[in-house]
Amino acid sequence: MWHYAALLPVGIWGVSLASRRLRALRALPQPRPRQPALPPATRREMEHTLRREIALAVAGHGVSPDREWASRLALGTLLTAESRLDEAREVLLADNRRVSDDVRHQINFCILQINVLAHEPDQATLDAIRRGRQLATSGVTTNRALVSQSASAQPSEPVTPTHDRWTALEGLCLARMGRHDEAIDKLKNCVVGDPDWSAPTPYFYYLGQAYELAGHQTEALTSYLRASQSLPGSKYADMARHHHHALQTGGAGGPFRSADGVGEAG
Image (tube, rainbow, N blue to C red; front, side, top):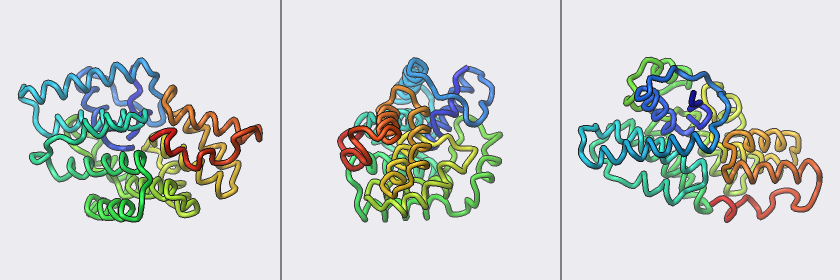
């Protein structure tokens, strides 16, 4: 069985959508939260399937815009988690004029996430995230309500990122900006405390970085360990494993090597 839930769900939402899309295609049962991480071979099979779905949509084979974008968002999310940011951006920079508002909010979320990871974010990026959250989450009150609402949804039905997940993206941005205490405050509950979301590897990695710079070694070790286990073989997982080892052993390359990993993972 493919354990799609481990890959994200923004999570970033795209993978959550495509998980349901691909389960429908393969008649797979609903996965439980916190499943083991997807191994590289399964991720490649998933990528191939998603690219094929997108190609069918582009070729005009009767695929609705929202269904096409469910696959685009899932593929963009997978590529982002693997630090293939240019490829992720290319997948997401397609014509989205005919999609629903919910899907457009997801696209905005994923592109902002790529921007935060690909470049050193500034106040303008942070403001854009806060505006995006305000627009996308009006009428959405809790993660639990969203999960309940989407439990019986059709595979192609979009699910808007919740307020907490936008807040996690704000925390990721703050961590990348070096505002570590603020980042911890935003990330710690949204990323760790949400049982219905397997947060993507970069969130755990940068939460670990924020904890490390703030002097919270135990919490940093826990976050690095989560990141190293969440997507084996990905760049952020490898970086987290290195930081975990260096922090645990007190070896060379101590806290916050090369500041926050800019250049390493971007």
